[in-house]
Structures are given as C-alpha cells and as structure tokens.
Image (cartoon, rainbow, N blue to C red; front, side, top):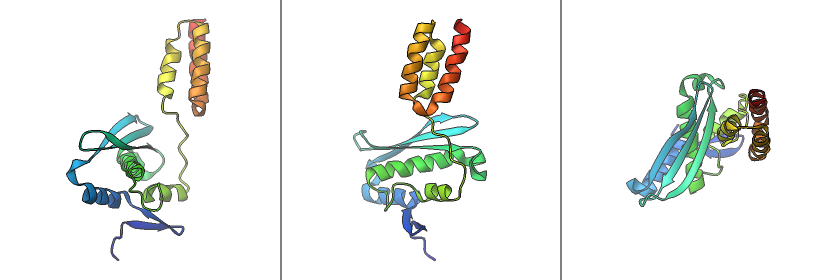
Amino acid sequence: MADTGYVNIHGKQYKTVAARVNDFREAFGPGYGLLTEIVHADEQVVRMKALIVSPEGAVIATGHAEEYRDSSKINKTSALENAETSAIGRALAAFGLGGTEFASADEVARAITGKPCAPVVDEKVEDWLAAIDEASDLEELEKTYFKAIEACPNSKKQIIAATNKRKAAIA
C-alpha cells in the first residue's frame, strides 16, 4: 500500500508531519527556514519550539510541544525527538500546512491510546518560581505569590510550595 502521508483516525484524516515538511519544502524551497529550539529539558520533560522564518528572517509561524519521558517506551529514549516533531507539525499547521486537523497524526494517536496526559505546565512558571525564591521580605513574597498565581493558574501547587519554602526561609 502506498504511503499517502495521511493517517485515518476515527474517520478523520491527519496528515503526518513528514508529509507536511515535504509539502513545505516543495512549495517554498530553501528560502524559508524551519528552526527548532529546546525550551526546556530535564529527566522528566522536554519542551520544544519550532519556528518558520521567511527568507528575510522574519518569524512567520511558531509551534510548541511537550513530551514526558515516562509517558511511553519511545519517550524513554526519544522524548526530545518526539517533541521536536510535534512542534514542527504545529508550526506548519499554524503556517497553513495542517491537513484537515491542527494536531499531528502522532499526537492524536497518542491521545487515543490512553497514555497518561501530561500535567498542564505554565510556560513562565520557572520565572515566577525564581522570583518567589528571590523575595527579600514577606510583603514582597505575598505580592509575587498573587502575581504568580494569576499568571500561572495551572501551576498553583508548585507556586504554593515555593512560597511556603521561601516564607520559612524569610521568617
């Protein structure tokens, strides 16, 4: 059977990232760039960002992706690669090369297989945790805490833990 670049999942056609990259290169040639960067990587999680840039260097589209190393056998050794592929797929979808769906075939397949969902992590939470850790007094700590909670509502437990730790150190 010929590879069409599409995967049928529950009646919807999802275009593979490889097929989207091929379409991108055929349509735009070497003038447009596809760049990736590691946003965060540690023993638990990898976050990647992909950029599509014009020949002049202007950012045309971006995509982000996150993979947890313990979420699958493949991610134990290849979380970085999977996150990069997903980020590229999302950037291409934002650029207009997404097939019939924004998510990549791989992302949808992983979601359907029932693999554990990664907890939602706010992008700027590390900056807020650092600000909490640098608070010099309880008044500054309280202000920083409330701003952090407002900016990163999905990271409330982390923010509370960091605030309590810093409060104990200040007191």
